[in-house]
Each structure stands twice: as C-alpha cells, then as structure tokens.
Image (cartoon, rainbow over all chains, first blue to last red; front, side, top):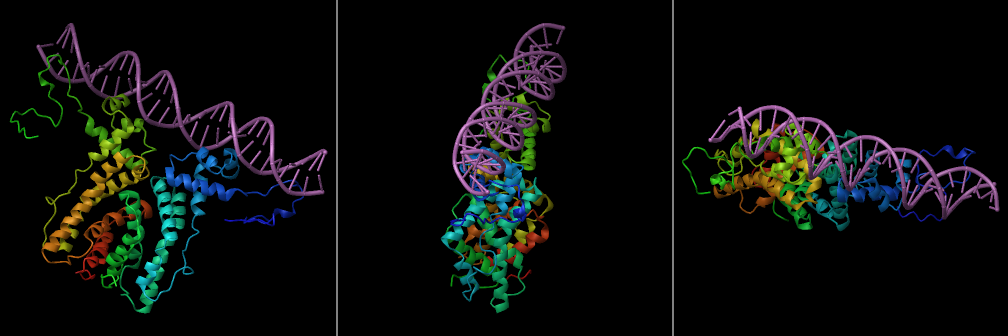
Length: 220
Length: 220
DNA sequence: CATATACGGAACTGACCAGTTCCGGATCTG
DNA sequence: CAGATCCGGAACTGGTCAGTTCCGTATATG
C-alpha cells in the first residue's frame, strides 16, 4: 500500500529465494500487481456479491487483463479467498486499542469515522459471501479469520482487561457479549439496511453491552 | 373479504369472479399446485441461495414442469418474492404468545423444537437472499415482512407487556432490545455456522436481553 | 540494440441457465 | 365417449460467464 518505490527492486513478496537463478534476464518482478487486483475484487464483491461478480469486472476495475488474473490465481474462488484473507489489515490486537481506564471509554473510543468505514466495507463483503459460506469451507475460514474474529477478539480483550481491573463482573458470558456489536451491526447493515451511525453504536454499548456485564444501563 | 359464503365450495383463490362464464367445461382449478412449487422454491433457496437456484431445480423438486412455473409466475425473481411472502405462516401476534406472567417465562416458552426449526429455515432462506436485498427492493420488503419483522414484533409486544406490568424499566430502547435475539441468531447461524440450541438462547435471554431491561443477569 | 519476459486486450470455447415452444397424456364435463 | 383444458417433460434459443489462447507492446537487462 502506497508503495513509493524509489528503489525499484524489493517488493512485499514472500517465498522469493530463487534470486540466484541465472536464467531470468528481462523480468519485471512476479506479483507486482496483486494488491490492485485484490482490491478490485473486494470492491466488486462488496457491490455485487460472489455470484454476480465476474472476472471481467475485476479485471476492468483493476485495469488489468483477465489473463493476468488467471496467471496468478487458478480460479475465481481462490482469488476471492485470497482477497478476503488479505483484508485483515485492521486493528485486531491491543496495539491500537486505546486504554482509557474504563470499558465504556475504550468501547466508545473505537467509534471513529475510519473504523466505521472499514467495518462497513467488511460487512458488505461478508454480505456478498454469506450464501457461499455453506458451500466453501475454505472461504468460510477466510471470512472468519479476516472479518469475524478480529473484531470479536478485540472486544473480548477489552472486556477481559475490565474484568482484571475489577470493573465488571467476572461471571458473564464473555464470548457471547463480545459478539453483540458484530452481530447487531451486521444485521442492521445487511438485513435491516439501516445506517450504522455513532448513535446506534453508543446506544448498543450503553443499552446492551454494559448492562450485560453488570454495569448500570444509564449513559454515564 | 367480508363475504362469508355459507356455500361449501369456496377455494382460497382471489380474483375468481368469472364463475358465470359458460365457456369453461373441463377444468381442474387454476393454481392448484402453487403450494408445492412455492415450498420447493424455498427449499432450493435455503440450500443454494438465490443465484445458484435454477428454475429446473425448483421444477424437479416440486415434480412439476418448468413450463408450469412460467405459466404462473413471469420470472424467477417474482416466484421467489411470492415464495418468501407466503412464508410468514408462523406466530407473529399475541395469539400463540404464551402468557406466563414473567417476561423471562414468556421468552423461554417460545423456545420449542418447532419454533427453532422454523426459525432455522427462515434464517437459511434469508442467508440465500442477503446479497440480493440491495439489488431488489421488492424482495427486501418481502423478506422484511415475512422473516425479519414478525419475530421482532413478537419480542416487542412481550417487552411492552412486561413494561405495562411494571416488571421492567420503561426507559430502555425497546426496538434495539427486540432485535437482539434475531440479530445474534442470524449471525450465529449464517456467519459463525454454529448451532442455535436451547442453551444458546437461554444464555442470550439471561445474559443479554434481561440485563438490558434492568433485570438481574442471574438465571432465576 | 537484441532478447526475454510479463503485461493488457481481444477473441474464442464450452457449459450453464432463464425463458419459450411444443406435444402426448391425464382429468374433468356433459 | 367427445371436447376442452391443463399438466409434466423434453427440446430449443439466446445470452452470459469461467477459463483459455493469442498477439502486439512495454519494459528491463546486458
């Protein structure tokens, strides 16, 4: 992302130990256009869903030839799996988790324009894949690892920190509670088709999440 | 629809005022096989999703000819809309709502094998349609009226009855709370692909719904 | 400049599917 | 039994799309 390649050699490419091979003369580097293509795939996916997405759409969006797509991925399904897998570039561990001292403060601090935008994008992609999840376990794993789990894990960690602090009750069902906001955000976006705005999220935190943890329901 | 005709030949068929027409001799009744076809459509829909569902699949499942489908519905989209619309044959108003005296009793009483089965089927159908909801507003309305709304409305009514009883706090966000179980059930079924069993639902009621209404979180 | 590589783009193939047409048989009416 | 109607099934049409092949070009190397 934002590769201002002043030096035209190294790329973010793993498994590239064949530098000593003497046969390759003129070459441009292997998977240099992967990011654009994967981004285009996610964009089309979020707009059209898996079945309505065509390889021509992806190629056109990425300004690439369809042949280039098939040089790199053997099928549409595997392109989509990799596109989804490469999507987990959001916050997931405690590095970006703000530590405000209270659970409510932490949860509210996560409501930022950028994170809401990223979440909305992930929701749209997930919605386009829902009907495939039962047919393609590999895709289901990728969706889980890239979209479902990171958000739930972050919630879990914040709750556990609050428990360690003695702020909330320790006998609650943390896993269920960590899934309240993802579940209700997904439902609201994909099924009810209503906007997920700051007021909705604050209402969820104060009216559902914190009460479930034994904290008073009032907005403090 | 005020015509309670004591004559014992009525069929559940609207727009059938041509009884005086003398031309029709041998005939079998118009849409006699509609229910089987709509059921077949729902079955295929829940297994394959909208895009992967073919009219041949529906016809084969209903043991009907594809021509019969097109004699009755002008397109695949309209068949699906009607199939979804004819799905709301579950409990929705307070007729089947058990009145146990407490909100927890009412909510737990709704957990029966039959209702869980019906709910699971609706969830699968909804999952097969999610990616279409943004493309077909008419379908989105049908899904909302037949699947989304009935369950939420029932929850709302039970909560309002509990408020009228003075059992729970009156200042909670009823609409949000009424959507907790639908949202988290849908998420668990379609995204997490975990079973929605009695324990999960009881945990949701005791650990999330009742606390959000100001009731103690313990399982009473 | 010569060479080798990978690219974008366009044309092609084969399968699949929505929607249509046609036909033989079943069913009801009189 | 004769006549009319509707059904299931099979064949057909036209369009779309995954995946393939080919070609002219750009670029980097030496």
